[in-house]
Length: 285
Ligand SMILES: NC(=O)c1ccc[n+]([C@@H]2O[C@H](COP(=O)([O-])OP(=O)(O)OC[C@H]3O[C@@H](n4cnc5c(N)ncnc54)[C@H](OP(=O)(O)O)[C@@H]3O)[C@@H](O)[C@H]2O)c1
Image 1 (tube, rainbow, N blue to C red):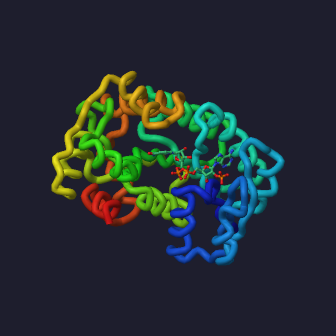
Image 2: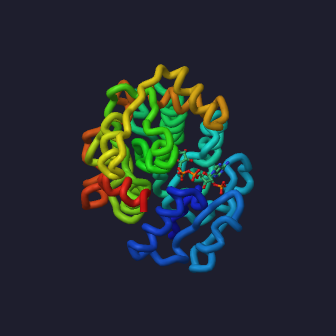
Image 3: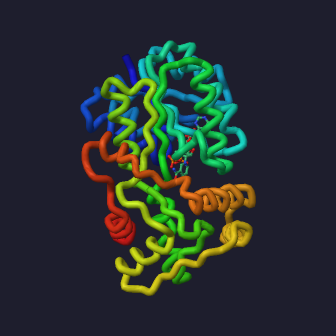
């Protein structure tokens, strides 16, 4: 009766495996997967079962998901390959006879209009089409998307974005991971849709204010039209396609598509979510 975590080499996947162990799941009952098991050797060293799974390679998935009871499908990185990858993973989960697929979707995936949301909506639709018991973990943005940029922000004195006055319910990856671990280790989640986000939504201007408060520096928010923001991102070294997707995500934020007041994350984890100020302080340490 094992719990499979795909993408266990990634930042969210690692935290989820840790959260499962923290909740007392025996290491041999957890299967961590990656396209390269060397990346998750530290889990193997601690008794977690480690298997190779590449969503582009269906043959690898049959062996990887064998004996799985519940499976956390962590969405993959490459946006244009994502839906086909996820369909192969869902097919393999169905073939393995899992009792539950938990899928890390995106806030308001059913109605949001961004490029990213479309890939999650298509995956959610495929889960329904395959009629596999599933739970949707519709994650908002990661706080780390912003705290990871602090050196750049401090260097330029400005948070740049195209999100206008949109409020963003960003939360720490560790909180999303804990929620995933709760869903994988407790009953009653099949068929549920959780809109997961931080307790305290903020605008990018609010983010700039919070960084100012934490550093004593005067940080401002510079709102840019989406095409100028994408241009700035490519100038900072991002591939053009990714810059376009991120600028499009900011436009979604300006329409409130990454805001939720559901309280689902706080309820699932049973404690308040990580405050923005704490995440900034931690990143500055
Ligand atoms: N909510 C947000 O703000 C936000 C931001 C960025 C991304 N995301 C989404 O959330 C996911 C998890 O976030 P993260 O921070 O943990 O990302 P990450 O650190 O980049 O990890 C991505 C994971 O996807 C796995 N992966 C990529 N291609 C795969 C394939 N073909 N088959 C199987 N696994 C594959 C990688 O595993 P290997 O390379 O080891 O196989 C890796 O473990 C991302 O992949 C993305 O879909 C959300």
